[in-house]
Image 1: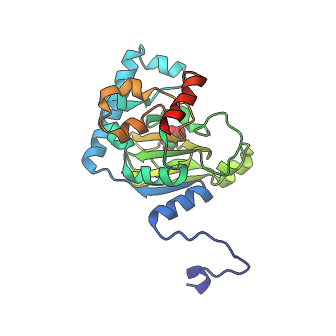
Image 2: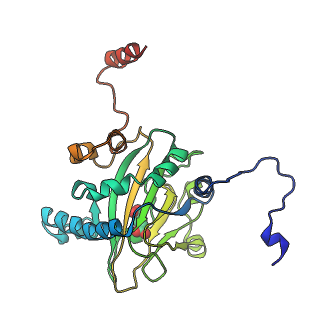
Image 3: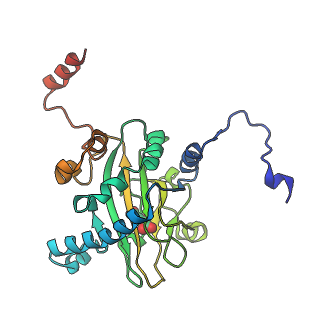
Length: 273
Ligand SMILES: O=C(O)CCC(=O)C(=O)O
């Protein structure tokens, strides 16, 4: 192999990233191209439960809402929303320390869960997530720092047959959605193993790939945000006593809420002195 392919030689550069650990490298990838894949902390037994309970949570939610046909009407079929409200194992999934380490590096010390959804990609079946989107929907601006991290747990293999996740690299830095030609020439399918996390800046344009296999391809997506953003669901209200540790209560918690009054806002600051 050519020495230039094996060594990084540069000139005219006085500033550069110096990632030495896996965590720093993951953060560098997310900041630069918008995504990274890391191995998770969950064992095969836990992943098997997540797989089974993703389907059960979805079936339960279909029953409560009057059948799958009602979810089809709102383009929301084959998604189990907030499955942690139905099965505790999804609390453990959301607390994976490897994901929290990346969130801490990107978002700072205080971050919360905006949403958690299990995506069930059924063979030969359309899914609303097949269409390109940002996880912070309708937003067309960029920010110099990451405001939200999406963490997608691969419950089944992610490859070109089962669908993978398609991304448009670095589009978290571009306000508009690109032209059709740009999309078709630059889209890229992320492959990953069972138990891996696909981590991406929530502003990166992405979509679920079509599943051409004959088995379901499941994933659990988490959108982790700065605490000033309002959550999609009130996890504290839904989970209540199921949140056992302070760390869980903060992460699933409501973030920064408004003070009940200006007097109370001031009083709380005075009382801290
Ligand atoms: O299922 C996937 O590959 C991606 C999921 C997705 O697009 C989402 O949850 O926003």
